[in-house]
Image 1 (tube, helix red, strand yellow):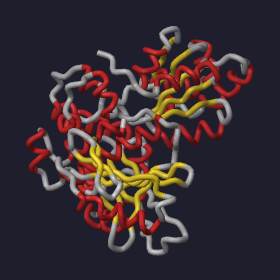
Image 2 (cartoon, one colour):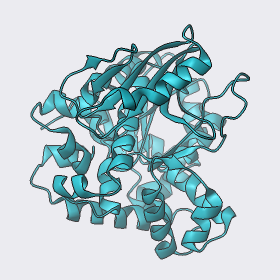
Image 3 (cartoon, rainbow, N blue to C red):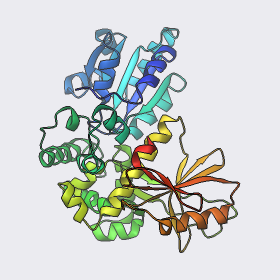
Image 4 (cartoon, rainbow, N blue to C red):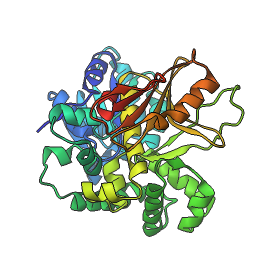
Length: 386
């Protein structure tokens, strides 16, 4: 079963206007499958094969003769030397668009090579795991709690008989053995796995790198490098605080979120919907899930850098969407019956920032239907974020 991705129209438009498309994201998010489905006329080569990667790196001219455009080149980060030759190939035939479709699981490595060699020639698109809206469009009966525990990896919905525990155990082994080993500053995979699990325990919380490093038994500089590794491989996101000159006491530490709740639940040993309901981390897991849906919403709207959180020394609003200076506020609450008490912080921040600046606010909860509060805020189900 194929689940359509919200990014597909953009990829099709880009193929008509840009010579190169770079599709990045975590492993198993469907990058290769999406390209193969949308562009069946392109040939395909994967640099996961060591012989192909070696030739692409050491003999790029010969490699491109063997794999002429239009072509999909999978896991292109394994051959950084190929990018300069792609530039020459593109410039020789600049009027031909959609010729090189590149995928990669190491975002920072890709961005460095693209910025150096393909600036102005490539459209860069990030593919996350499935949003709840994408899942529900294909499988309308999927419940929100089931989606949280199962996560957003497409293979888990294409083949519902896959055992979740086995899938995520295999995913972690593959991630540690392949992506993590690619970074020379990771000396101990066991320490890195402990670090990853410590990050899972802190998802949806303010990031304190010193505490994180101390709990894992590594140096703060190592913790910083490993956080960059998680970001580079699409496993974690740091959400920055929103602040202005009018709010002097806003904290400036980011919040840490894992990008997929299925992996988060696996790391927290939450293996079923009942485990989720009984878990002391259920509030943080729910907030992580809401964060993923808001990121997907903003990305589909073509807005980047629009999502933040708000916090001073005593109060916090989970999410702030800044659209051209107009602010939309969101609180994530696990409850099925949100009430006025859940809007206290929304109301406080609206008073601080001013009614003219705050366009609205919502409590995102497990309520089946949206409804208004007397103070102008709303309770909304997560389905409305799609």
